[in-house]
Image (cartoon, rainbow, N blue to C red; front, side, top):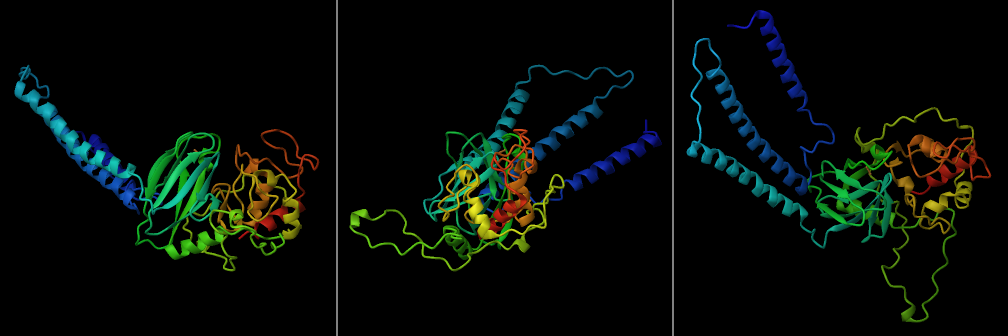
Length: 416
Ligand code: CUA
């Protein structure tokens, strides 16, 4: 019996809607894994394509058989039941062997890819130590003496080997378009390597944490910048330098008394007049620029102007130094929070949540916990109520006035 016209209209509408939905799914988001930019990403992508094709062939075959059977053997008035088959050895061998062959076709390339991507990176790879923190990322470059946070620079065409560790709970490290992802596990070092494609130009990518790790798991992002090798070297050389703002330059080192007294390890890099390389902020793509709105209109006396030198002095006596390191500032040697030595060279703060500018730095110092739920850094703005301790911040508890906050922000903005 043909479908009544209303039924047909519904069927047509359903088909069109499904087709549109399918087409909509084809547009690639900015973090798509279907456009890999490393050999690691391509290995995974090729495997995915193979499995998708095999799976599609099996799906079409099974569905065709199903539809054929439904139509051919459908109930008809007066027709006897079709014949039933029991114990057909040939059939049973066939439907045992066929899936086994299909599985072999899947297993061989899968296992090959697992071994390929789990292999140790070659020794000449760029080494980057990654530490997951609640909720930010620390990056260390032992070959360059660089410690930084939430923004990782990678040279194009050079293999990078990440060693992944956590200082607290489980996290998971992923730059979708580079390949990965890999869990960051307590008491265990995981490794991940890839080579940013040599045909890339300087590019920016979003990385993220992909293992639920507490309140601000969703706010545990980072930026990756793949840059030409020469620019990377300039970046790393500058990042390894101390930030000497406000600190009197050290006197020339005294001559060594005896060779045995010589300090081992890499020689201190020569003074760096060059400001180094930073990925141009105006080249950042729409999806890597943070757009998080401040959660509310934070009261701030905008008539005050920050003074960097006063900020340096305030910072160096405030609670800041208990958690943050600024290489070159002898007071600032804390290791709980992100290293701030070259914070002004970063484009984001708070693990990629906000842009790094005076307005957001001031808001952050004043009320970090209002800006990022659960963050370890307490509120410092006098008059703020800390959302965790519910205590009102006062000067005796280490609170800072808007002037002091503006001064510290001005100091941090000098740390290029
Ligand atoms: Cu770290 Cu989720």
